[in-house]
Image (cartoon, rainbow, N blue to C red; front, side):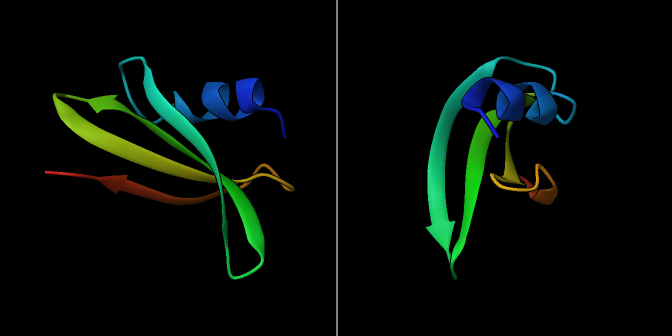
Length: 61
């Protein structure tokens, strides 16, 4: 999955612009970690870079 495709998919979960996008690896799984804002809070969306599946979302306080 390209960075652009991951950012587009992640933006379904937050209303602001992408703040940061990084390619990470955890337990052998490569994923995109995309950060943005959702109602003045930071939102993180993790997307499997191989399958394109959203594996986690987290809203920070």
